[in-house]
Amino acid sequence: MVMAATEESPRSPEAKVGMRVEDLWDVQEPQLSPTEKLNACFESIPVSAFPSAPLNQVIEIKSDSSLAEAVQILAQHKILSAPVVDVDAPDHSSWIDRYLGVVEFAGIAVWILYQSEPPSPRSPSDGSAVAAARNGVISPLEQQVLGPESAASTPGSFFESLTSSELYKSTQVRDISGSFRWAPFLALQTSNSFLTMLLLLSKYKMKSIPVVDLGEGKIENIITQSAVIHMLAECAGLQWFESWGTKTLSELGLPMMSPASIVKVYEDEPVLQAFKLMRKKKVGGIPVIEKGGSKAVGNISLRDIHFLLTAPEIYHDYRSITAKNFLTAVRSYLEKHEEFSPMLSDMITCKKDHSVKDLILLLDSKKIHRVYVVDDNGNLEGVVTLRDIISRLVHEPRGYFGDFFDGVLPLPENSRV
Image (cartoon, rainbow, N blue to C red; front, side, top):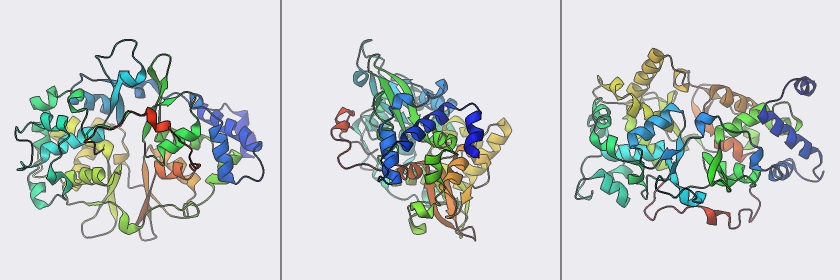
């Protein structure tokens, strides 16, 4: 049996959590449904039991760092966001006073998109992007769909010029706090439960959650959606996981959207259109569709924005940076520098009759955040994300959170994140 073999071998920290769930699973009331059993199990385990993130992923960015420095830090550590620590906070501050919020690639991307907009009569009169950021001003054009004119107005040299500008190098992270480029800071205490953590990462759409030590007033761990999927992958073979994971995607109601609802960009459209759509539709990645067809030829995710900022020279020879040009240039750059990235892989897809277990193992092994569901002809039928899978693992009991969110730093008045 699988179980006998796995019990004889050393267990990973994640698998040990799974075995803890297994022990709890065995003592649950028999009349409970499988989902209710899982809820009860995860409610009984504190987040302090979740394995610590690698040290290179528990990163703080100082509030006086420049945007250029913040981009380099996020790219270097291969993370999408990081908490911002206030360099002016007293040494013995509480965690709420110590952290300003979370800066994300998404937030910096919006700043970049603002720079790409043509001047608007309703834009800030002083023409200062920093002043606009401080005031939470958003260009009216940002909500519109980019057309051919915008593709032509973003030449290959645009980001090379932008990243060498004094504005990009000197604008500090704290300069754009209090704007729509900022995310709220919500943290868990070590005593909060796994169920709380899983709900925040799924239903409440958080991609990562800091865990704070109240005594020290500092971040002790950061739990991401990817880390939860890795934990689930390590639980393969355990009874509770197999009873849930052997179900097919369609049995769990996945994918959650119809083909017509898929947010996508065509290969001849400007790459900025992809990032604009991601922000407007609040998604972390979109497929690139062949011109005039319905098959995906690639994927662009929010984390790929850093290739516009950390290697802007690779687009220099393009008249315009289309989605196709972006994919071609980045893949060439990665191959040249021998860097691993999901962008080097062929388009990863699955079908509705795949089990959720198969999908979890695929997501974990490939280190990706979404898999596209296709029909027998390769046409897109939907997308399944890390969040979708976690949302099918647990459910929120009525009135579960109560006043929990009272401890969250509120979004600024003009926030649009």
